[in-house]
Amino acid sequence: MYKAIPIISHWINGRAVEVPLDKTGPVYNPATGEEIARVPRGGETEVEAAVVAASKAYPAWRDTPLIARSAIFFAFRELCWKNREEMAKLITRDHGKTYPDALGEVVRGLETVEYACGLPVHMAGMNTPNVSTSIDVRTLRQPLGVTAGITPFNFPVMVPMWIYPIALMTGNTFIWKPSSHTPGATQMQAELWKQAGLPDGVFNIVYGGREAVNAILDSPGIQAVQFVGSTAVGKMVHERGTKAGKRVGCYMGAKNAMVVLPDADMELAADSAVAAGYGSAGERCMAQSLVIAVGDVGDRLLPLMKERIAKLKIGPGIEPGMDMGPIYSAEHRETIIKWIDKGVEEGAKLVADGRPFKHPTSPKGFFLGVTLFDNVTPKMSIYTEEIFGPVLGMVRVKTFDDALALINEHQYGNGTAIFTTDGGAARRFELEVDVPMIGINVPIPVPAGYLSFGGTRSSAFADVQMRGEDSIRFFTKQKEVTVRWPKPGKQGPLSLVFPGNK
Ligand code: NAD
Image (tube, rainbow, N blue to C red; front, side, top):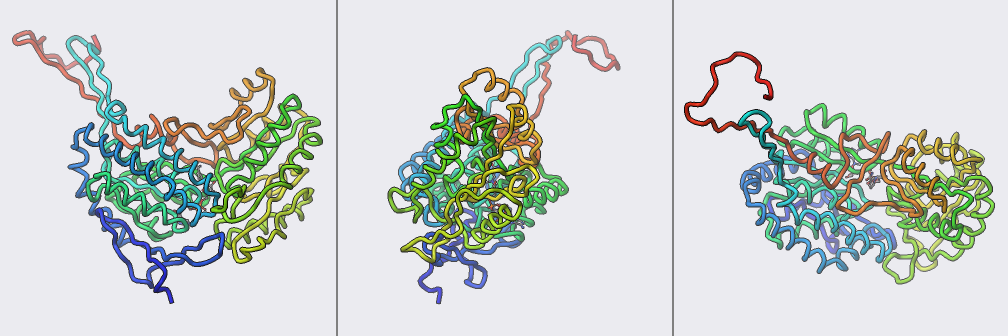
């Protein structure tokens, strides 16, 4: 029955590791609802094989001269760039997002690869001469060994590219446990690393779910894990991984809110709310799923948003001109519908209802229309919980202070934005909001790939943020070397006193 359907392989020690059909699960094209591939369900055996390969490759990779490592990054960047359209098509096929959106994902992911090309500079330590008489201190940054990344379905290229370039550039080897929903572009990344000249065993992929993740968290051979995904899974990953003595950073769920002040440019705010709420079918951790309308903003903004919603084109992401593709899975589509039902039960006002939407020529695709609620209140579960779909809720408040308090009291703290023409209000927002990624008249403030990306409260369990300098710290251990080169015959007398810095 499955003969014509390709079976994806794990990638261990620089080659595809095939699996029998009974150890695979289905991959669907969400735009058609058809099964298009089978993806392996790996577990302890595959993770341990990857740990063996990565451990074996580690000493040589760690000792590879920086400029030689950097040359491989340049080659990988060029190959990804050359193949970006193919990569984006695979993202659209497996995930459902529109092709231009998928292309944007590849380009934004490459920013972190480009940052890693400069690794000889990033790996520089510090040298502090004369901390005491004739004593200098050197700071070394050294890799940890075998490291791992566990990533979500929604950005199969960009999010892993926020993790593995830094792990690899710092001299670690890497095991990637990707989402099983979006394997096309995943596999391509492994093949491009091989073509770029990365030695076998430095970069490995093991597919699977809970069993593979647990094996990674429990393996004594893995030193550090970065996880990106939902808060429920991230909490488990953090607890289990740290209990096993690993360094763990988890970047998780979100419920982002954009504040619109009465002095804002309402046309821009309406464009931004609709784009950030429904782009990629709301399946972005930086989607704006709440609009906090201050004062009379609700009455002015809502009609502008409705106008825009009425014009949205929903269909297969590969077709030109589409604004929104399908939901990534049939199950998730059902979950989103239940959230909409719940919002209605809780008393929010349904302004646009995405539930009845049916695509005329792709009736088996996992399509859903866009939903807009008005009069959402902080007591409703559609306010407190992440829905991760094309569902946007408007909350009406009286003052700027009310809006700020709502954001700071929410269980999630990932991204936020303010729309205003008042520089003073924007400045106060920037200083007082307890959320790390902030947009000022920018609805999806994902910082450039060489800057950090993090979260507060239930959006991140991590000591440092992802990417940039913080990730270099995460993926390295620091050593301080205290050095003296005594002049012959000039040592002081023997002393048992704790050395002071004089
Ligand atoms: P998910 O938590 O279901 O899956 C993430 C990873 O964990 C996947 O590799 C998956 O295979 C694995 N996994 C799933 N269930 C597991 C279990 N029970 N035990 C062990 N491992 C398990 O997340 P998702 O649905 O793939 O992605 C959407 C979520 O990711 C949203 O919550 C979104 O906000 C979040 N996200 C966060 C960021 C960020 O940077 N903060 C970025 C993108 C996505």
